[in-house]
Length: 261
Image 1 (cartoon, rainbow, N blue to C red):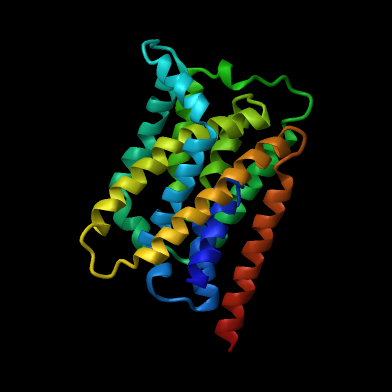
Image 2: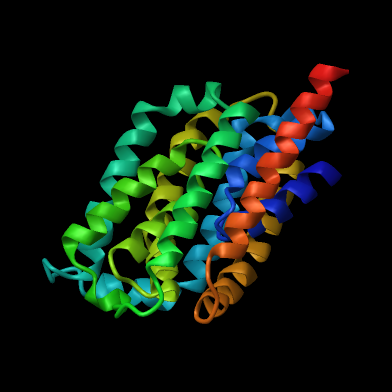
């Protein structure tokens, strides 16, 4: 239960902060040798369901407004739906690959790669005119959606890669983050439903651990969304990029120490 609580708090923090929740959920059990229910993709999905709840609750008014504009063919709702297709398709096709590729070595590469992209996007940020989320085009929304598909690879970070994609298309940081979160809602919901069918009827499902994970990740995630958007109004992505480099370095040292031992 303690392991589940730690991972739930970690999920709530890292699902929205662009440091990769999947990487942290894989690395903590690996680093501390945690086994059992907490070290499974099913538990990861349960935690993602918790952060889905936080997304729906935090942006509930936005979703109500979006649903009211469903008849507008060029409305934001349809842009989100179309931009969700790449990640949804990739999720179905790559499900087994994702389950089998949870290697710390892969995470080192993806952590560093997206960190470099964050730093490069920030170099072009200052001095350029930036648009709000209401000005995003269908073409740019689809581009961000394609970027989101790459987040299925552990270590990439869904929020990280989609915020970077949003910045590359001229969005303000806070607006790029908001669109990232709105876009991530159906993606996370789809992943949760896809995995839910594997949980129904399972003899190994530990209800208390899974429920604790869902509730704690939901509460943590809600506050992280709120304060991250405020943070990005006046601060860059660089601190998150440097943190990702640090995590990659720790993994390298841990692997080297284990090999040397």
